Image (cartoon, rainbow, N blue to C red):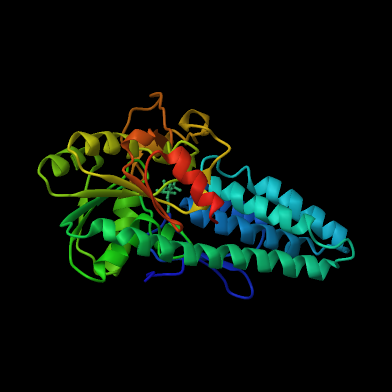
Length: 348
Ligand code: MRU
């Protein structure tokens, strides 16, 4: 675990696994500049909130390297410009902006006399530090959250919040990996329309890890819950507002409402870098809208009539009242989240 390195600095370039091709093809891409990184994020070749943050950190470094700046001041300008550019790739996962803010603050804090080489080295060190901290954070989320799955025979998850979505072992799936060290249980994976992160990525990732996995379509979740097949739902997050409202892959909110109806706890697993205390509640979270072709097609084949109008929000926002706990690297947070989230940041 993880089954593959989702993103890795090889010493020559940043290597990512192209997630749009999984599970059919395992193809790695050598990303050499910020434009290629922007494209990889935009097209979901690298995806999942924490992984997007890690990718953005490397993107800033690659921009400075590709520009071959003649002075330290110029290198800083390139880094800041790259950060602004990478920030336009996707709007919802706050980890992207968190990582870019870290890079901005780091280069702004460098001494005026720093050379171009020193700025370049500092941007690489920052990207590696973001990556390493994500790895440690995922492991801590797994450790803190696994006891929530004690005695559980079935767990339901949505989208992919695993190793593929992070720089480490995942967030929601970290709980599952950690709990699976002790005992066997079944994971029900929602296929996650329209881009099938559950069918293509979670089912693949869990199978690699030898975890008993059952794939269902999103609309089967009610049946699974009503039949008592699962005793917990675990999902990741793209942005958590100060009151605990949680943006995650579209389909999470109906799942949360269903889970509450059937009295099954729903846990959100996410690093504190996914928490946006500057956004008071879910109404302030920007939700990405995707292209119509992702809905009008299935597996590359057009299934809807030409000209049909499409609405395709990539995420939905689950009201905090449906979230039983938020599992972070700081521990398991309980409602009221306004208080517990603030306390977790204060204790950092
Ligand atoms: O559009 P995606 O595939 O980037 O969406 C990913 C999700 O919604 C994940 O559940 C979330 O980022 C958490 S990943 C640990």
